Length: 193
Image 1 (cartoon, rainbow, N blue to C red):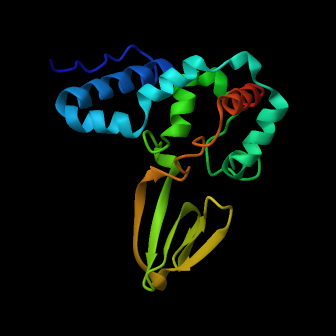
Image 2 (image 1 turned 60 degrees about the vertical axis):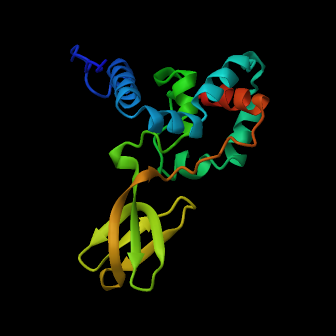
């Protein structure tokens, strides 16, 4: 049947409980309205595989120091460290999100992208394409911060087209080559933030 939209239970939209209810409603809505597309999406984002993998990992084996190294090696620090805030703050992340939601956001970063973390895509008259967060905009141009940590200045007269991307700046596949032990280590490190 048709899913029922979650009632407003007095929590702000950003609260974890309300967010979980909205996501559950949205998934149920997509599954009932677009079943084939929903199944393709679930398969493409390895949602069932993610759940099984998270259940088999020995989380107690995670090591904070190895996790800190993994955080650097996986390029997480490029966007989440103190000096470069392309991505959201990670302090208290393991208290705000359960493991399933935390790792799903890493495995499928385009699934749910808050508006303030959506990139601006700029195409120049020369055909070059830049993606990044706007760090400065004036009447004569814009300056973007890319996920590589570079700043790019684009003059207004050089801009052919610009649009807000629905995709995350965080690349997909960050954990594709990481073993179960690295996942446990990374989680141990994130738990200290």
